[in-house]
Image (cartoon, rainbow, N blue to C red; front, side, top):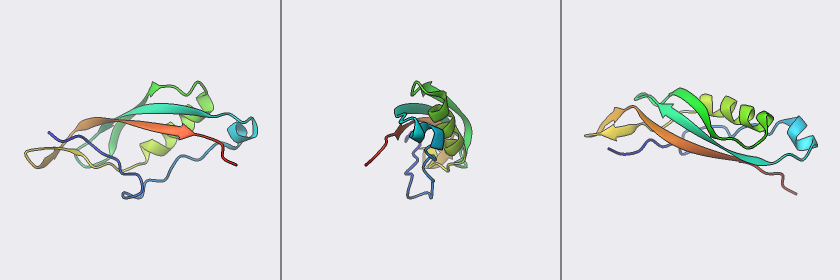
Length: 94
């Protein structure tokens, strides 16, 4: 069985919006989300596997990834439900 994928740019998935309040307070972090992907490529569920340590960043990541499309896993060439871990990094740049 192949793994599910998300190829952010290829599928038109929009990166999470960096919350203004987090930017203003110079909050950075990395959250890892576990996504249960349906055979049609939508997310059945999205949960925080590893928190950034900041609820505001975790919420922004969850909101974005829930709207993403995914490449479903395949078994014998047919799409099947699967799971994928999606890391999201919020980093301030110059």
